[in-house]
Structure formats: structure tokens, C-alpha cells
Length: 286
Image: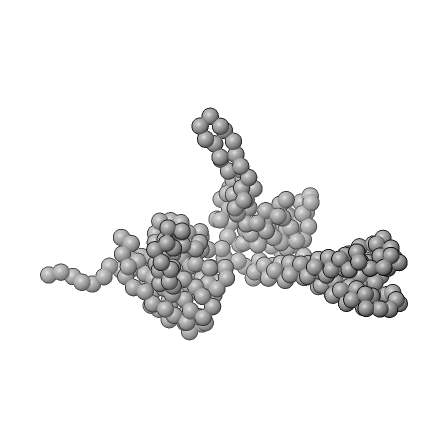
């Protein structure tokens, strides 16, 4: 008699979104066992994990560091082996795209051993990550307002331009705020100057909050030549709290995009610049 009972699931793929998570289960041979959509949030995470049930199932989560962070953390805490998955390959996308097909592709890619072990962050490292994100936004805004002041001063009267051209950055912003000149140009400059000072002070405050976290996470790093708080925090967040992701110096250089890539052909023996990897870590090292 033919047994129609499907084989047990061995691989799971999850396509994550803001409000839903699509789950696909595959057996050992890569055959589809089931697909099901679950809501996000604690109740939805519990429904999804109860649906999988078997702790031996390997799970690949697409967007594990964004929309999938909650479900990835939930499954890791339950003891599942969770992997970060990249978006489906171009060949897979050509066959059509849907939440279900993306989840199936994540499971198939995991079965092909293309997943990356989930980066498990400690509380300090996760706090560093969010502080870096906020500081980056503050620096970007302060730079934007500085550039606006530069543009306005180019078109300003000679007296105004000469008065404020001897300084730059926050020093010039403070000089503009304290001047007693009047007029629309001055008011516009003062508005940009106040915004620049606000965002620069915000960036400095966030950097000060990072220092004790960096010292707790990796005190030796902050003492290295040329390594300040922001560079150290960036490298710590890149490594996370899972040293198995950085198995060697070569693995670290590949992860940061600092390793040369072979580009030889025929009698030509050469290497090219690696434009992959974590670009924030690459910038910190540079």
C-alpha cells in the first residue's frame, strides 16, 4: 500500500515582511512539505515555531537583520539553528516572485549550504549597533546643513562672506549664531547654523555613550593605534558576539571587503579590489 504521508521537514525558509512571515518547509530530498503565512509579533512567532515543532529543522531567514530580526531571535532562543539568507538568486527570480516562492528559495539555498550562521548579538553589541545608526544619521544631517551654509555664503555679500570664511564647521556655525547682523540671508544662515550645532552635539553625545560599551565588549581594541570609539564600535558590531563567523584573518578580511579577489585569465595573473563585504567595516578599516 502506498504511504501518502509526507517526509518530515529538515529545512525551513522564511520570507520576512513588516506584518507577515511566510514559511516554507522542505524534506531531506528538497521536496516541499508545506507553506504557511504567519503574522509578526509574539503570538505569530509562537504560531510559526509551533508549526515547525521539530528542533532539528535548520531555518534560513531572509532579512534576518531587518524585518526578520524578531523571528530569528525567537527561534534562536528556542534552540533552532538559524541562518541568515541572501535574497533569491537572479535565476530563481526569473521564474516568478511571490512570498511563497521566496520562502521556498530560502529553504533550497539553505539546503545547498549557502546560509550564514546567525549573528547573535549581546545586549552591549546590539546597543552599539543602534547608537551607530543614530550617530550616522546625526552626522549626515550636520554635514548637509554645513554644505547649505557653504552654498549660501558663496552667494552672500562680500562683507558677510569674508567675515565667516576664516572658519568652518561648528566654529563657523557658532560665530554665525552670535553675530548681530540682520537680513534674510543672515536669518537663513542662523537657521542652518543652529541645526548644524544641534546635530553635531547629538553625534558627540551618542559617541560618548558608545565608549563604555566598547570598553566592556573589547577593551584591547580601543587601545590600538588609530582606533577611536566609532571605529572600534563599527568593528565590534561587524563581528557581533559570535566569533565562529570570523574563523581566521582571511575570513575577517573577506567579511570586511579588504581581501583581494583573484581576476586571473590565461597568462594574466592579477587581483582586483573586493567591493563586497560589510562596507561600514571596510570604511572603518580604511
